[in-house]
Image (cartoon, rainbow, N blue to C red; front, side, top):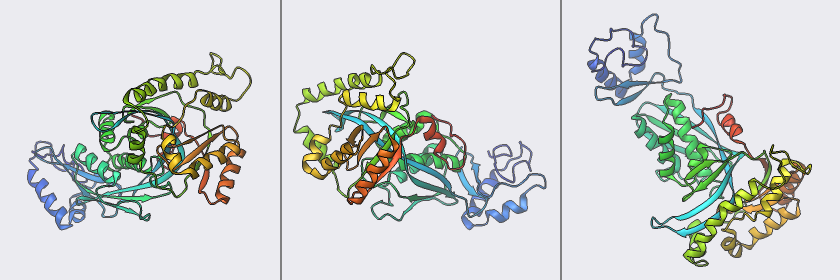
Length: 402
């Protein structure tokens, strides 16, 4: 039964709670299909009921508990979300698993480099994606589509979802752009619907769609295990200057994995996995810090961390198979090192090479030099976890973390 306590929108409160409104539910659905809901809502609104915001969707709860989205106004305002990039600080590839994935170990770190995702929800059904970049798919293969579909299913909501992607990050550059776009879509859709998934459900959907998605539900510095989808927040690093350089080179991740498998035996890969945690521990608990976390010999924290990162020998295994095939990437790494970067690495399987700098001026100059040589490069800052969540929604306060 649908009654006045279950019906949401301008007609709630008109009828007593015990009044049977099941006829109203089906009549409203009919009017939605006929495009007349706005007229109905205005004619039935009680004088003291107030008005819904034009951007707010209305949910009807049906006799079987299903939800149907009604649009109080045909033009809903978009929910805007920033979709941030990530880099991999070290990436260790383990043996091939029975499920076809490789065991991985990595430290993800988010950057202030971002795309912009805009989500609108209106009456009707289906998902539409638009993007001016022709490299971005706009069909069911897009991770934003796959996440939106699962969010609607999980929340038991039916509506027309429109997703616009303003692309700034490179496509398939190793910066997690598609995965970040998908998580941004999830968070925007929750806000647009004024409904929220549980933390466990968010993580389930993210891991189901892709290995890199869950890290964007944490932000900052994140330890990635399993195939990369098992994520754990680690102590935030200080905000560091970072230069990303992404040449127009296509790197096939499946091919890179296949070449890696031909280099090591299963036992050798397992042994390398075991040493990763030790290397990370040595880095983050380096001798340059006193028990209070203050550098012991007067160096800044950023400089000391980067120096210890190099000493710990934390590297990206993909460099061993990608650089021989694309030697220009190795040269970009050398340029960044000669420009004063304290740590330089491939991100993911590439093709982005990044450099971490203790000095801002050196980072800006390195990006300028690469740009002059024809390599697209820019200087960014890494984002701490609090910065990440605070900056997700432009012009709004901090979003509640999972």
